[in-house]
Length: 133
Image (tube, rainbow, N blue to C red; front, top):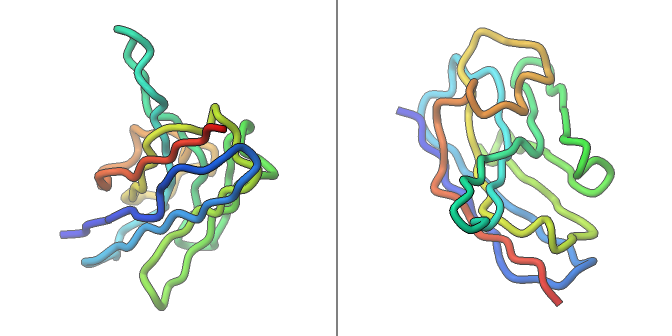
């Protein structure tokens, strides 16, 4: 059984950087992609869905980013350490939220698909990121 565990969250000021890590264990055969998602703070009674931040495929290392983080966030993977990273730079208050790591099983879909949570079936518990002055 594959498991993932995020770490690296914290409280930072606008403009700061933070690097999240996601360690995965278990049999990764059949995993097509790895992704980062986030869920913002509750908005009253309104449900806040998880939104895709970045994803990387396992076959050829293709990467996709959500428009709102493009140029600021970088996803990477260290196969030797079984770890996925998300380097976040120039953080903004609207980046505040719980960040989740997730794994998507095969078959391989088109790259933009991996910003959608529905193709993932393994999720971590999340790590909190707070950006405030």
